[in-house]
Image (cartoon, rainbow, N blue to C red; front, side, top):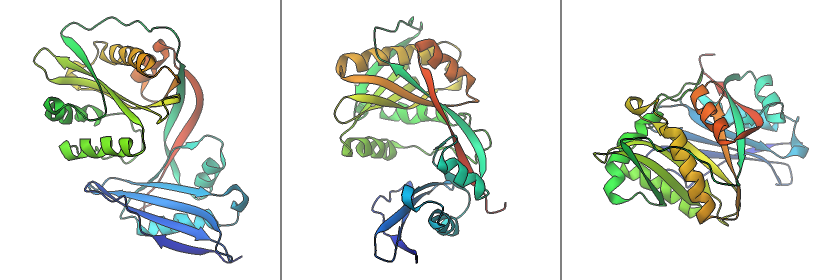
Amino acid sequence: MTVQIKALVDPSDSSSSRSLTWLATGDDGRPLAAASLRIPADGGAADLQIHVHPAERRAGVGTRLLDAAIAAAPGTVLTEAVEEGSPGDHFCAARGLRAVLRLTYTRLELGGPVVSDPVPGYRLIHWVGSTPPELVDTFVRARHAMDDMPMDDADYVPDTWDASRLDAVTKAVADRGEFLCVTAALTTEGEMAAFTELVVPADGAGDAQHYGTGVLPEHRGRGLSRWMKAEQIGQVRDRFPSVAGLLADTADSNAAMRRVNESLGYRPTHRSLLYQYNAAG
């Protein structure tokens, strides 16, 4: 079978990244596989996704797409998370990519209330969708709380945030019809010390997905993560009563966040890995 690899135009380019997409087709024009590569403008690792139809695996299609993506990437390539023991896991290992980050996925079955004591000197604020205008500047500053999150051996460059990027993230979620729920901890001076984000499906049912939790270094060790998450659980349960559970993925090396999630009732479901390719080997 002759395989054609076609580069497609991806309309998702933004000021923070550009995207490349490839489609693999057979002799008859039927699609066999696809790949996408997001190249950040700040010089970080490019994010790669490859999806091969199960019936077309082990025929070299995925390798062709991987080669095309690597050739187009300006530097390091980091794959999406692949489930441990899955065909994607075996493919990455067989093609010489290096496992650089291990993640444990957990789920919380929503039930009764989760109790957590308030942290003195702070207050919580909740919103859905766009960031309140008066909080935009302090939220941009608070995003630096994620700069030192555990990434193990992955070539990780912290994201650059500004007001336009906050808007872009909110818009991307809204364009999918989903709900971006944010809970943040403010100091008595009104400065944001920590935040946690959660995305609820468009139909308000099924499982919602955690996006990230960050606490600025000078505010760590006081219980803010657990307090925010516990209060957010209650917010989701009250506002979206059809949501059945909450999903989280946490680096195995992020012991602090794993302890918080376990104390709230999150239980492991599976493990995944991120693989990396470096042009230098």
